[in-house]
Length: 116
Image (tube, rainbow, N blue to C red; front, side, top):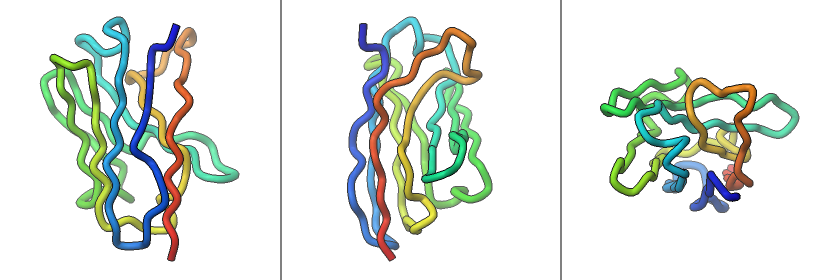
């Protein structure tokens, strides 16, 4: 049963933009805070942005002013607009609820590669 489907990644040049999308099942999405997580090569997965059901957002310092998270509650979809991309943004991006539960599973993620 597929519950999280990320898309929109790809190869971008430094300074470029990408827009990620994530479709989630209602059991994960509805009324929950959702987040985008990044797993950079050789590093642990970390949350880079989150958005509450009501639309309040939070970002890790390294992406503030460059990334924008949004959601469409009618479509069970969360987005990540990534601008002014840097090579250090490279990684596999996942969406999931916040916080992660012990029983949480992950989607396949979407690869973002930023060239210098």
